[in-house]
Amino acid sequence: MPNPVTALSLSDQDAYRRWRDDKLADLPGSPDDLIVEVDDPRRLTEAETEAIRERCGRWNMAVYRSRVGDDPDKDIPRLLGARFGLHSLDHNPGADEDAITAVTIQSDALHQGFIPYTDKPIAWHTDGYYNSPQRQIRAFILHCVRPAAEGGDNALLDPDVVYIRLRDRDPEHIRALMHHEAMTIPPNIIDGVERRPAVTGPVFMAGDHGELVMRFTDRKRNIAWRDNATTTAAVAALREVLGADDTPVMRVRLEPGWGVICNNALHTRTRFSDSGAPRLLYRARYYERIQGT
Image 1 (cartoon, one colour):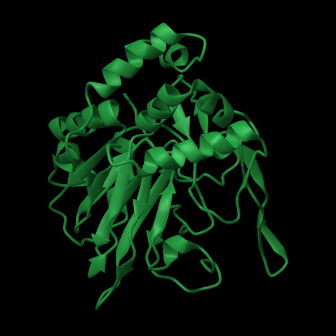
Image 2 (cartoon, rainbow, N blue to C red; image 1 turned 135 degrees about the vertical axis):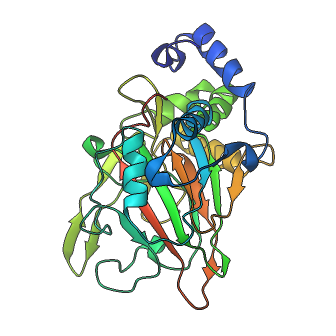
Image 3 (cartoon, rainbow, N blue to C red; image 1 turned 30 degrees about the vertical axis):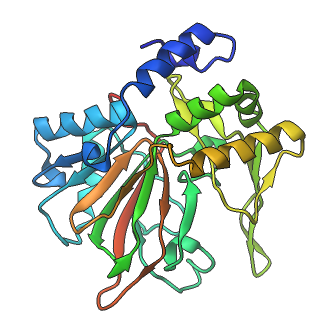
């Protein structure tokens, strides 16, 4: 496969075409292709590790199905991440002191106004799209302790595929979305206090090793796109790709002991309802990409 730096260059069509053809020839056929059976994510065997790494190398994501059930040990995502070279956790405002976030319904002041801590659906996004350029998220783990009684399912999509679909439509879409002022998330201000400043940056960019990095949210409010015709057209095309019937979206429902590990894949969540013990997932976000992918 060609060097990703070259493949992402709009001036090197041959390298892009080789990378594109290799990628599209090896798409997952169903969510089952993503699944790796493991015993304990805290202590992966070599075979389990390589099976997860192989899927993340091909598709930027894997789903592990373990036997730990509803064990609430937060070492599960932490030790799993370390196995893949993921150490630099993002201390986002909603995270616990250990930087691992308990994603569950919460109504305290710290989590007020943040959709992930409600039962509402979440549109397509990559994690940390509101982070500064120095704190871009490259990978995350989502580990399920307890699913919702109903709903709360996730959809996953490889950003590489979205890039390819858009570039094949019109390379100008990519040029617009790689502009350093393409997407702005306004500051987060609560009760007159600025919790986070405005953040402006591209949707697509090359990572430290030339791999594709995507920063995106499909929110319709509290977002500002670069005000020109090419950006407007590119965003419309991107939303069409996300909604197209032939886009290879992988839909999964995480059960106790299951989880997702990925290179910050696009993902969504459906609305859910609880009965009894509330839905609980752990989320760990990292500044590194999964080692070996």
